[in-house]
Length: 212
Image (tube, rainbow, N blue to C red):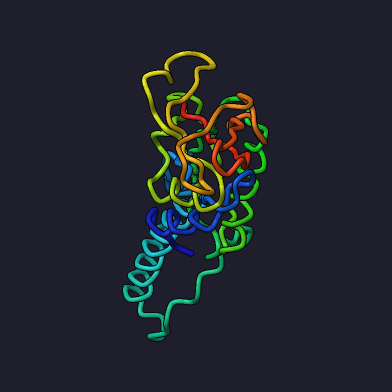
């Protein structure tokens, strides 16, 4: 089965983030690259075909030269040669940068990618985790940020205070009522990459996806 890199990107859109399932991995921006590597088996099959063609031409020349009752050259049989199946495919390599180096969802994400590709009929898969450059919320798509808000999680907001450790982010908008009258409750929410806020108007607590 043949496939292009663009088709693989489209398949990866079907893989949700295990912690925030409303986002796919492309929304999150953690898929850094997709590469196709020609498998050694495919290369060997092509080389084997060239060798067979050369041998067939030589066999035909030999029969024509000796005119053995004008019979056709017998079909070649390569006894003991390995059978090269057409199902052999190029290696698909997916480069993944987790949201942070200790993210507990990394192994689940890697497995979800592998299972989705297997579901689509691909088995020669390599997943590479790349930690540098580090992931940043700048890599999230605008569509992904809007999905977060609709899901009830405030999307990341950049401010001058983001450069300070455990600083308060300016004007985190409540995803439930839209008010900017909110306050930080805890630097850690439902997961380590989120903070817990509360709206001063509707009084509802909500997660804020911290800016990295």
